Length: 178
Image (cartoon, rainbow, N blue to C red; front, side, top):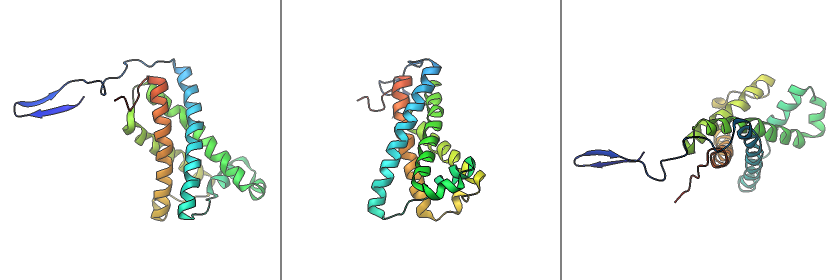
């Protein structure tokens, strides 16, 4: 609730932007299905913004995601033949797997941009678990700072798209209800 500070003290009362439905608009199963779909959408937006960013920065593709998938699936020879395809398998697969986490957050009332910020950290952690498990990456704080910024920016874009759509479709909350 917004707080208003006056000479007589602080006053808090609900307004149209701070109130949201007490219950989700859909059942839990449908919320998870929404999460799968929004995860796919978020991954597509993240991949698109990465390509736009690469046009401006001339940053080359990272093949760590593709190597991760290839290593875990025992397809190391396939990676060499199809590195871009393996990268896409990782990006979209992880995006789809993470979406239901954000849908569950919305379902249980953990909503808004701050919840999406926390979800971005979940998405980064998911990537790190599989990349470190495959032995193809280093801990993120050991990366060059420009790579940290790029990764966090794109994962944050993913998290905001997925968060907004999950909050709207699962909980019935529009972040921009003017």
